[in-house]
Image (cartoon, rainbow, N blue to C red):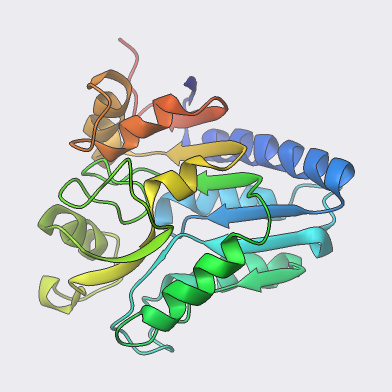
Length: 243
C-alpha cells in the first residue's frame, strides 16, 4: 500500500483530492463515465471540499454511491450519511447520478436494490476512511468478513464504533447512536479499481499503525487494504507521526 504523509489535514485533503480527480478524469476519458463509492464522515471533509474545487471534472458523467447508512433512523434524520454527502459534495458539483441508500426498517428492500445498482458495472474509485477500531465502512472487527458472499448487509455496530459516532458530533448521547446499520462489505469495496483512503487526526493513529503493521485479518479490517493492487493511504502528522 502506498502511504502519503502530509503535515496538515488541509494538505492531506488537497493531495488526496488531486489523486481522486486524476483517476476520475482518466475513467471518464476512457469509459465515458466514472462510478464511485464515497465514505461519509468528518475525516473526509477536507478531501471532499478540495475535490469540489478540482477543475476539469465533468460531474455529469459521475455515478455516485455511499458505503453505509443507519437504517433505523427517520429518512430526514440529520445523522443520516446520504444526506450529509448530498450537502457536502453532491449538491455542490451537480453529480450526474446519485444512488443513496434509502433503507426501510428491516433493510431488505434497500439491500436488494443497492446490490443490483452496484452490480450494473464495475466500480472505478472508492474514497474511504478507517475507523478508530480499524473498520472499513461499518465492517467492525466483530462482524468483518474478508470472504463475505454478499455486497450489502445489515450489521451490529460494536461499542467502539458507536462511541466514535458520538465523538464525531452527530448524536447527543451514546444511547442515541443506532446499534445497527447497513454497510457495503469488504469484498465489495475491494473490487474497485482504485482506492483512496484518507485518515487524519490523532484519534486514528493506532488504527493507522495497525493497518500498516498488523497481520492481515478481520481483527483489524483495514488491513484488507494491503491486498489491493491500487490503494493509497493519505495521512497527516497526527495520524502517522514521523518515527
